[in-house]
Length: 183
Image (cartoon, rainbow, N blue to C red; front, top):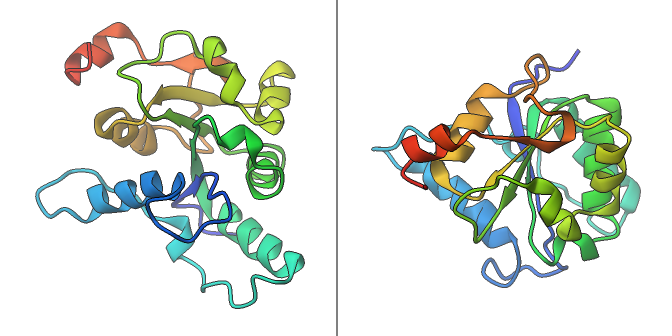
């Protein structure tokens, strides 16, 4: 049995390695928040818990490594932008495995928003793998802006033994957003 204490972060890299040219910039921002000495933002990065992928040319190698990382995770942060829906290989696989096999909650984080109160209005950016599982009511998802305080709270609170309320359309209350200074 895996020791499930990590947070798995999924995003659409668009096949680019430039850290500013795709949604990887949001993953890098999460890591920067984590390393600040004066900050309370902390999570165990599931991508750091296993060795680096040595052979990206073999799909089976990459898939096996991603699945191992997900098995060691307590939750998944899914960064959702207009480009995420375009990912047809890794993000759908990560979503499906996280929900169907690992049974971990998804923390759906949307850059560019102050608050999320109607996640269904953002379904146009959801990958099909997420939309299908929300529709089938098999996904446990909290939808929030890509903002430090809501992410800190969700990463610390939701995991494979404690799911967000609302099934696939979970949200934070207005009072929570007010306490973070976002409303």
